[in-house]
Length: 209
Image 1 (cartoon, one colour):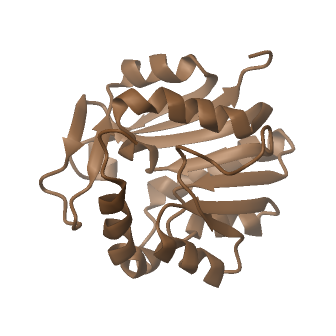
Image 2: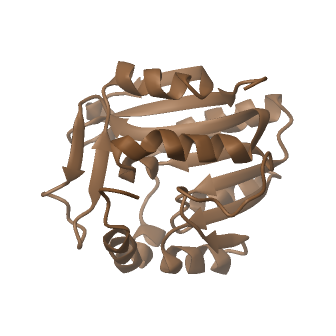
């Protein structure tokens, strides 16, 4: 992806794979995950694709709830941890998904699409929409609330990671070109910690597009 050193992202997450595998899942993330699960149940979804799956904790959760899951991540070390949990997992970039059209009822992407350069986001969203079934559900969760793009100089990871953040109305406008917004919630900084609030968004693939 233009503007992003993909090798640096891979190296950064490879080095942090084991640490992320044992880290605590914050309660507010569990609440949003449970809410998305309720959407999936109400819509009789049977399969789920996770983008940027990391060590696979969310995929494992959804699999335990009865969904057929595929975990994808650009980091081979993360995919290895997913497979150790008994998950179907593949090394894959969300910029080019090696998945047939309209294959999945639902897609889960938590804190991964914030690594997409702004001028590449629409192409990534097109690719995501391509593999999602008509009327399928897509969870898009990222930090934001301010406009930013570039290397995060205070990043504790090495190599330091590239991030893109959007103001709330800006990200809504982009997403609305491809999906209908079913749910949009801002989780404040005091809850999530750090310099940005969190944008928790549930989207639906538009029929007829």
